[in-house]
Image 1 (spheres, rainbow, N blue to C red):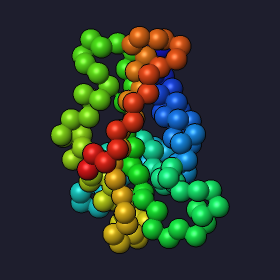
Image 2: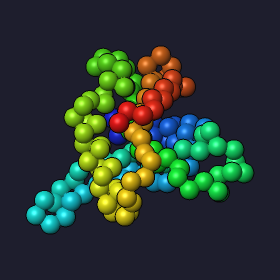
Image 3: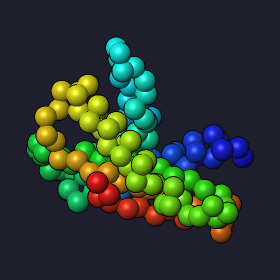
Image 4: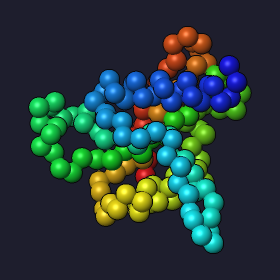
Length: 139
């Protein structure tokens, strides 16, 4: 499996994992770009979701201020260069936060409740069934 396939596989595993825990997936692979003189890509947000994990199903339709969750997925098949979570550097977090701000501007969102999460998909010990670690509130 090449690097791109591994990443796509990890993202799909993360989506399934989050859905089982009550998250509603809103968007995948959001490309944050600037236009005009400062044209260029600000970064990509792997998964954007709403966290309903602690909300009973029947009450979900009445909730107005649901937390928006921006999720970075890191997938690794070996530990030669560290664990998947070690790939989320300070520079990467800063880039993600700029992309999140662009998402707010594009979608005309003022100050929603939001957080940055990391889902680490680790195939190192088991090539068939990976270990999944979810870290919440990294912003």
